Length: 361
Image (cartoon, rainbow, N blue to C red):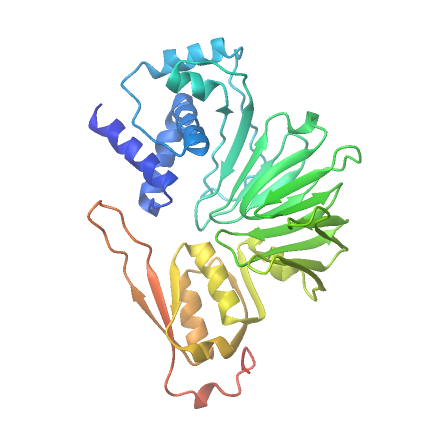
């Protein structure tokens, strides 16, 4: 195996282990986009990992010929390609995956099974991706999020997709085929509507905000009946993962929850833990609170396409907030840690007492 191929396989491993760095993501994405067979090989490896939890370097083979054999023996003569639509941000990394449940098995073990297609879209940190699903529904995926669905989505009795992270859905209306978004211990069902789902992992809370239409939000419980709430526009369903508790509440400004689709981070009298959670997801960093007193502060502000340093600098100008940056560290395996931001309370708070953008309860 040549060194370039070995590097790619190591990057795929780091991707699967969720330890890949931003610069490595760029290398991997460039490789996947260079040739169609590279993307197919990547997706086959991902599916093996998904099904078995194992990863091994493939042997040196004629990749193009092998994939041709896979398609032929799986009864597939053409590669299925998802048409990307409404891509508004060039920096967004769109992964259009053709996953062969039968193909990957044959490719790695030599045994063909019934072919099932899946398509997966993943978005790199700090970017947004817009796509049109086979049924005409439009989805915007937030930073570090992914969406997985069957390529025959429009033909199924249920249009079911799997979300990790955050997505804004504009569902094509079809009263005979409900549209269902599955996240951890929660499902959101709609017939034709627009809503936002925030379900980053690991999550203590999962939020569903309805913009228009009507949705049913269902939580898994030990009881057969489960728990369900019906949302009207400008209502939020919040699921407490630890307590297995699903609540519904009214929201005064739904734009707070959908501003990210336009590159905005919107905070409306939010506690610092909520601010931290959203910034960690968007910028792929660790943020630590050194002072428990910071948990008493709430923040209001709108930030458009600004760096984390710029946001924290602004917050430090309008609140008794101090931050320090711990650079990423390379370990013995050559893998970098996330950057860490440590937040503390400034010693002198008097000049911030009357500022309207921050409230100390």
